[in-house]
Image 1 (tube, rainbow, N blue to C red):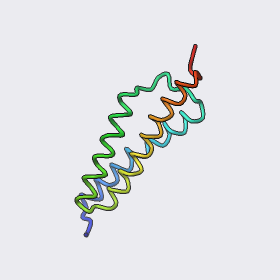
Image 2: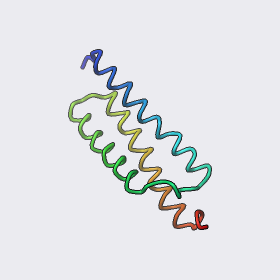
Image 3: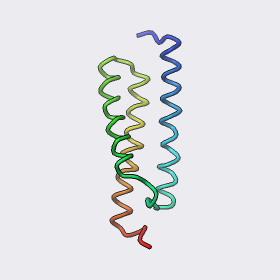
Image 4: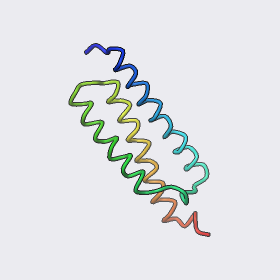
Length: 93
């Protein structure tokens, strides 16, 4: 499948948005602080990313599919850390 100009624009936007998750994963892992993170928000992000995986897989848009898989992995990692660090009592005041 050939990628046109608009697909590149969408792909770059999706990559930019998704790479924003990387810093959240890094900061959360480093500080182990999840007090300001919304579990609902990150579950919604993870669910939306997973739906995008299915959608772009169906459309056979491999670049967007790979971005969506990466985005899901980041969101899922944050969700896991919210449970893990909250349960460990790391953020207790």
